[in-house]
Amino acid sequence: MEEFILGVDGGGTKTAVMVADSLGHVLAESWCGSGNYKSVGIDKAAKNIYEAVDKAAGLAGLEKGSRFSRACFGLSGLDTPKDQTVYEQIIFKSPLQEYLNKDKTIICNDSKIGLYAGTDRPDAIMIICGTGSNCYGLNRQGQEARANGWDFILGDQGSGFSIASKALQAIMKFYDGRGPSTILLDMVLKQLKLEDIFGLIEWVYAQPLDTGRIASLAKVVCSAAEKDDYVCRDILVQEAGEAELSIATVAKKLGFDDNVFDLVFVGSVFNCKQYFTSVLQENLKKKFRNIKFMPLTQKPVWGAIKLAMNLR
Image (cartoon, rainbow, N blue to C red; front, side, top):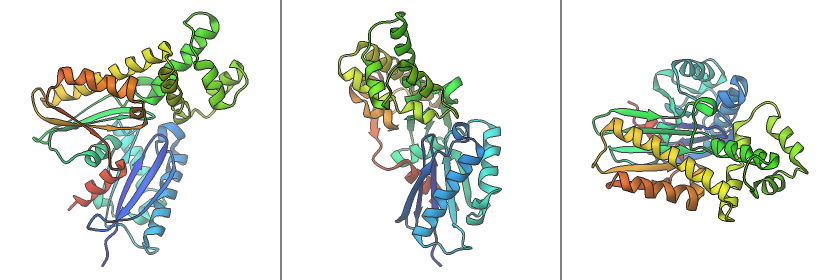
């Protein structure tokens, strides 16, 4: 009987689903909106995850009434025991349960699947700098450690949302005359097709709050920095420093001093190479001489497939 393995990456911006066979051959992929209930609410997150899984199951040829033999859900926003309970309800007390063997299903933070997607080295750290930010590591003794990832009010420094929030505040300071000149205002208005600052204010405070929508402006900040906007350069360097702090904190917890360890980069913010990624790498090289940078070549959802395949 053919086995079907399910991997889910429920991020702050989108949910990615992959179905593979028992040998790891990818059979189907699908995408839907955010799977983070803190970003879009429980009902919307549940709907997005279910629709993405249902579509991938159909594309892979899973017959109606059949179940995945093993599954792994890597979910952003899974930070506390309460979050674990909420996601278990979303997954096991919804139409999704029809697809799953509960005792063969992993539910974990998306940082863990990012790490497994990026490396097989037993000593490794993964940092997500996307809509949100999170840092997770694992050593050869099986110890785990994490830092940041407490969502947009309590944490997420080094993320697209944090970068964009600082940029929007810099725009308002410039508009008021409280801060230095920046080309950000014109660039953001053009990006969003808005006429003036008042349209921007309405756009920012539009309900419901969508952190992914705000975080999308991080790429404008990067573009402005490349046009010699020093306000944007400062923001990016500051946020690279926050990412560095998260990585160094996890490395300390895991005992990575002179050890060789991999650092896996996950997330769209790393596309800002000159003033974020390069700054971060140079600073880390000074602290950890045996660090190995690993730009993610596999999709994070592949890490969910790997974790599910390891279930016995």
